[in-house]
Image (tube, rainbow, N blue to C red; front, side, top):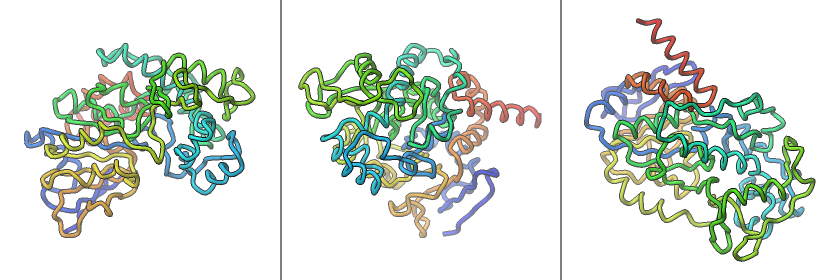
Length: 384
């Protein structure tokens, strides 16, 4: 098929592999969303949608897997060697079932921050104009390179959603959102999007359970245990213990308590498979954002939609070809928008005429996203 390409911004380009839409621009995608023919939108999101919030993604340069330092973790030499050869082993069942500590040490700032953030978000969900607490100078957005070098940053109380998250919320508010399949465990989805439409594909840091007996644990209790028993490998918490000790489950007494995230080698939640079966056939548009589409079975969301579903892929690199996206015969209606998620979604929002709606959510967003919105509002005012 004819491949069309044009400049989206200095950070993004867009390419389309078929001619079902009027052209290959984001304006054409916006036209489809506004047309009345697009009544049901689904999302599959990955770590890239949270980058603007200061949370490093996993597979890009500077992400957790690229910068993991096994020597900082409480592990045997064999386990450190496993993590050196395959960084994903740090969040695998193979290591966790024998040693709970590498997972907890790596996730310590995420755990403590996300549990606090989710509690705040639940109080303010009903009023999108209520501002959240202003982040301090030590939020993840200003964390030092040394802090982020092991794949996480400190002061997670400063984490707030991005424009990408806000776009999902706007689709919900306008009655267009069918389902959000989120591969992220950072909890930012829940700060803007109602929990009933979110499928946490890989679990969430916002719940705590035992990996051995599945007993759910109190999140406040668990946060206290993490503070008291897990050392801070990032060197930011002077009150943290010098050495880590396991946290036993109150029910089975085995050291398996952790946030309810899915470890490599474990099954996905049943809700993923149930919603995949019920939601995908009826989607008019699937938006894939900030994900490498390399982890299954989550990546099958992109390939298992109906033949009449248009797909928009928002990512720094083109992904999904091995899953049947961007077919050379033009049989699939696929659009690739290359660039940072916030850049692309902000332009899509402008094309849709939703900028005023986005401004109402601005107080809840991270600093980088707020600045981008201010720039967009100023640019729009300059054209009038």
